[in-house]
Image: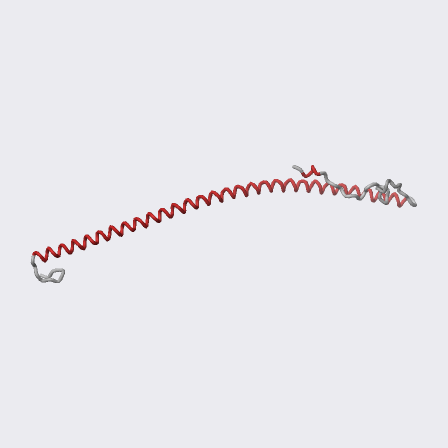
Amino acid sequence: MASPLGSSSGSPSSDEDLRQIVDQRKRKRMISNRESARRSRMRKQKQLDDLTSQVGQIRTENEQIAVNINFTNQLYVNLEAENSVLRAQMVELRHRLDSLNEIISFMNSSTRNLFDSEDHYEAPAIDGFVDSWGFPFLNQPIMAAGDLFMC
């Protein structure tokens, strides 16, 4: 009968030696497996720790982004409100300008008609503040009050 180690002797001492060798190999394999399992658990624990750390960092970044978004949204709302006020003021000023331009146009046409009907009209001078048709400050710019733009 051939032994697994290649010895042909069937002596009890060689069987005992064979069992010791097999047991020794089993123990080495068990120790190696335990060490491998321990390393695997350590790697998994390190991965878990790394992922936990990343979760904390990402949550912090998320909170900062949320704060920035809220701040930006508030700025946007404020600017939209200010823009609405400015648009309303622009419309009001445009209407005022149109009305004043109509008045100027009417005054100019009335003055022309007045001068066309008469031979020559000399407007009285009032300290140099009278235009060539005799109307004070007719073509002067219109200044808006400062409180018009305050909201």
